[in-house]
Image 1 (cartoon, rainbow, N blue to C red):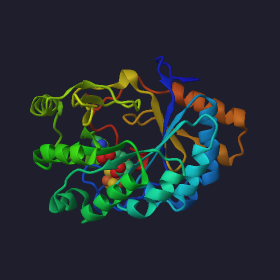
Image 2: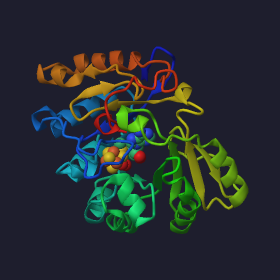
Image 3: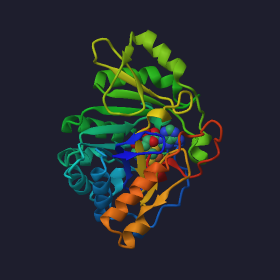
Length: 323
Ligand code: SAM
Ligand code: SF4
């Protein structure tokens, strides 16, 4: 079992399989971003499998593939198949922007990915293009239709709420998710990178109360182990989650660490601490040495982020850590 120095059990790994992306969401990546990692520094599929197997041996059961845009990593379904077959891994999920999902949904579902989170900040084509700097809403909606047909369940829609940008669309997004049977999650912008700091932050507590009243929602719980607080309709057909890292942080119950495509282990999204697993792997470490490094890396997890006290602390972009 992995525990940090603050008594939290860590059983969830978010694995970035690429730092590349075909979008440039305003809160995530700068428009002219050119700082991608060299492919020779990406963990290979063999290296990824070895690290995930070591995590699983130490009690990590849940794994999410993310990025960057994970569907841009060639052979992703093959990797997913290998990871979902590892002893101990009981839950394999994926975060994607869905631009490439129409072609890949079936293969990814067959490879053992069951749950899907899709970024979708607007249903208005022009606003979507302004936020993501890509005119890709039709491709994303096709991707979502393919994901439904392939049998992913649940499908969660992640909407980063930005004051004056898309906050007027929350009701429309809730209606769309209700119709489609998707779970909606509203997310506060985190000050990760200059992009995360420059995008109309707003606290989503008041939205929670407004939606509760408008839709007659009640407090609920959705399995998944994440930080969202949920409201559900009394018949259970609609759920909306609220992810409030700033207005109501949830660090006490944090159960996860992140692994970058370059093999850096990040114990906390809101901290600059990291541990270089790639060097260890490429120097030929033994399995016990690798596991000792994971135990040490997890121990270093800080008690909480300091997004409010030190908003300028994290200079790396969300796409490079694996959001
Ligand atoms: N490209 C995939 C996607 O967009 O779902 C996976 C990676 S993306 C970094 C994962 C999640 O991080 C997305 O839901 C995105 O909205 C969220 N995200 C990125 N930057 C953020 C920020 N500054 N604050 C809050 N959420 C952010
Ligand atoms: Fe790409 Fe996802 Fe970041 Fe948007 S949020 S730029 S889709 S990695």
